[in-house]
Image 1 (cartoon, rainbow, N blue to C red):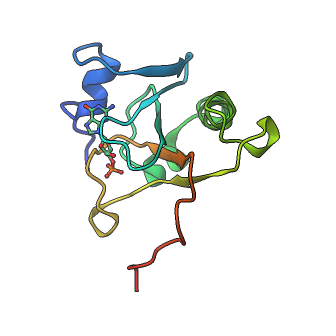
Image 2 (cartoon, rainbow, N blue to C red):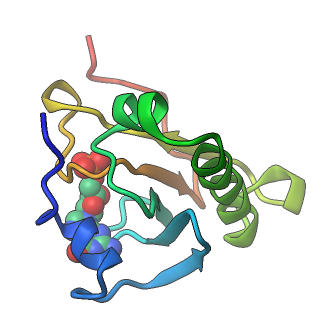
Length: 125
Ligand code: 5GP
């Protein structure tokens, strides 16, 4: 499957669509989800074009992978949900493909917190 550079996150990266930015560096961009499903709902995306975790883990450079995950942790601290910063924790989700209902085909993780987010995968069985 080829990367579709008309997806909404590619357009955000090109500056064609605004986002509510949390953090940005050479490797990754973090911003608030437009339709938050928890008091804290951030998205972290790599700057380069990867479809999902499978694509990212197979094809990204070590520097891209390290940069991405360092930003993911930093965002949890910046938004006050990381336990190390006095927060009460958070959940990471990354949807990949149709069974997971991935809507935007640019690799991303969701960071959800700010209140109890429930048990994991209540309707996955
Ligand atoms: P997925 O289902 O692909 O894992 O999640 C895509 C997420 O992107 C959804 O939570 C959706 O609310 C969010 N989203 C879709 N379009 C936009 C947008 O234009 N701006 C922002 N900030 N989030 C978006």
